[in-house]
Length: 206
Image 1 (cartoon, helix red, strand yellow):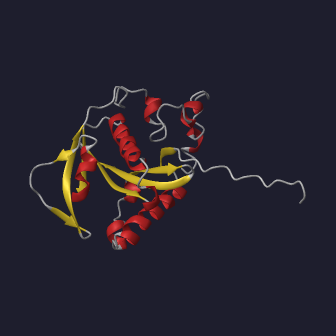
Image 2 (tube, rainbow, N blue to C red; image 1 turned 180 degrees about the vertical axis):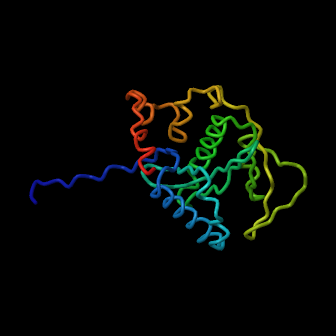
Image 3 (cartoon, rainbow, N blue to C red; image 1 turned 180 degrees about the horizontal axis):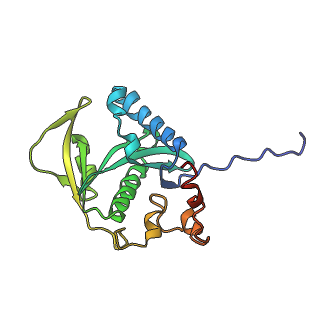
């Protein structure tokens, strides 16, 4: 070992990045983060936290360096989107990952053309949501569930200038969710000739 130097470990990056969950592995990260925060810290019953809505929602995952640090869920209704289930692991609560998760979700909702974002904030977190322009809804409905008191919040927004509408390029509309600015696999398939390979099979079973 004489004369051999042990390489020093590279410092861990603290850069924050946000991405949309796209596969089962990503949903496992979401489940792990929410389990650590809501089940372990807040003693929320499993069936109340994992409420049957996870497979019909968009999920954002926040990373500090390479470590999954937080997540957030968005669901869509007729004229509003609901931002919910924001969870940040306790080690990362002094970072800005919570702010970046919310901002990414707001930008995403604007891109989808919505004008209203609805949320149910724990009463102690009303000021956090006010940072983004959200205001108490004001109709004095008190909400309590999973042992916490909540305030209904509403954020009114303008769709982004690049919001996706029926006038958008049809190839944009069929690209992977949240990845609308990059040509996808179906864009590439448009370069092939139209051959309808199944047309001769239509009557095969007759």
